[in-house]
Amino acid sequence: MPHDRTKAARELLAFYAEAGVDAPIGETPVDRFADAPNANPKAAYAASVTLPPSPSLPLKGGGSTDAALPLSGGVSAAPAPPSPDAAIMAAREKARSAASLEELRGMLDRFEGCALRATATQLVFADGNPQARVMFVGEAPGRDEDIEGLPFVGRSGKLLDRMMAAIGLDRTGAYIANIVPWRPPGNRTPTPQESAICLPFLLRQIELADPDVLVCLGGPSAQTLLGIKDGILKTRGRWFNFHTGTREIRAMATLHPAYLLRQPLQKRLAWRDFLAIKKALAATSPRT
View 1 (cartoon, one colour):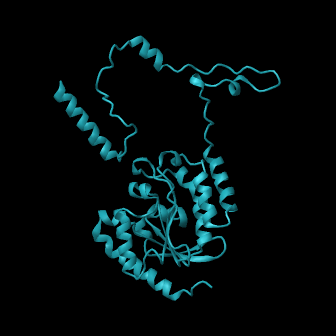
View 2: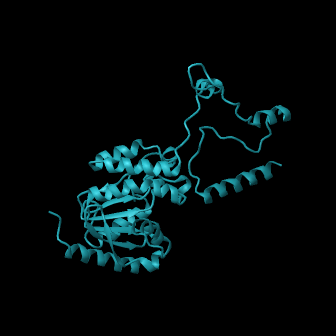
């Protein structure tokens, strides 16, 4: 029996690792395979049953008992999260009102319309030089980025640094951000709703940074920002027109560094893209 329990625990941990679970939710371990001491099946069943809410009663002077009565233990019910459509509209309204990147960052830090904010360690807004002529945009931060609060600082970030260095760039000459500024749990792919809620903030971020060249790192970034449906291997290396809100600039999609770590032979394609980016920057007049 102990051997079977140990084996089951190891298999469960292996499943968690493959699913991307890399952080505990409690300070002390819990043996999920152990029987509860003095377990009472009837009491356990009663505790697990959730009773339907009682109908609200009108109060004198207006209102109802729903707002007047706290939950058991004196804890008030948390307000329901906004619908995706309402969250998108709120994001658009707030993003439009941001007059600077610092103000936009503060708005994002307080924005509660995206549920990822509650599960991430911190906001991952941007890195590099906001006055740079080229801006790179990925999809979402990962574990290392969530810890440090900066985009592209893990393995893929180190590869991006080497790719930029190959054409004479570094983080003082580039601006880097993501569509979604909070890490999805387990490094999962952001849902379309999560990306749509965060997109107004990124579009305003691009407008305020006002780069000359926009580079979409990976298919999701290219599909979200450039409105294309083809895969990244068909899209990469092509130039698109992107309207920042104040002017039209050139935009290109290229392979994400994380993809290149899995498919190193494809680095030759990314090298061609970066040479084209270098040529475009040389041919574009600097902003005045």
